[in-house]
Amino acid sequence: MNAVSNNKEAVGERYQLETMRHAQQMTWKAIDQIARAITPGMRESEAQAQGKTILAQMGMDRIWHPLLVRFGANTLKTFKQRSEGDPELGTDDIFFIDMGVVWQGHEGDAGATFTTGSDPQMIACAAAAKTLFDQVEGFWRSEQVSGVALYDFAAAQAKAMGWTLNLDIKGHRVSDFPHAIHRGGDLGNLAQYPNTGLWILEIQLAHPERPFGAFYEDLLI
Image (cartoon, rainbow, N blue to C red):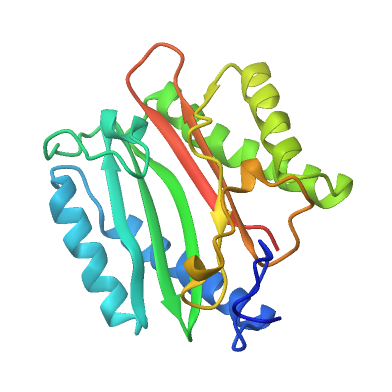
């Protein structure tokens, strides 16, 4: 496709679906390594610094959006909101990792939620974000609906599960770096079927009563 196209799914000349798969796989490897390095007693800022060190050791090209690590109540914050303070991770706590990293010139973007200890509602919230992602991804795969319809489905499913979906977070484009020149907009506002290997589905849930949430995102592929 022409890199200067106005098409919401335009890509650059270097774009390859298989390299997007590679970027996705490397991003998940990084999330796994960073999650295992985060332990109770760490500050949010310390976990973020550790994450950047791990990414550098893994041979990334560059970070294309800031690495976010959110602890406790900060799991309710959206990407553009700053964390409150620099909380310490507790022994019964919840945290998520959200990263956007370039590998071989292609944008990886993924996020997941983890828990420490045995708080059943925190564990359930983290699991629900992944479960809802899987349900919406399955709906995308089987029904081939628009991005708008995907998020309508996600909101209804979240409510049925007893959680609140944050609809300020509606997914976005990725491709060969930098995707931003194509101005694809939010997945949740896309009036057409989102094709494979180009869109990140984001799910952010809030507990209906307690001050924490969960996040999960991955490439629709």
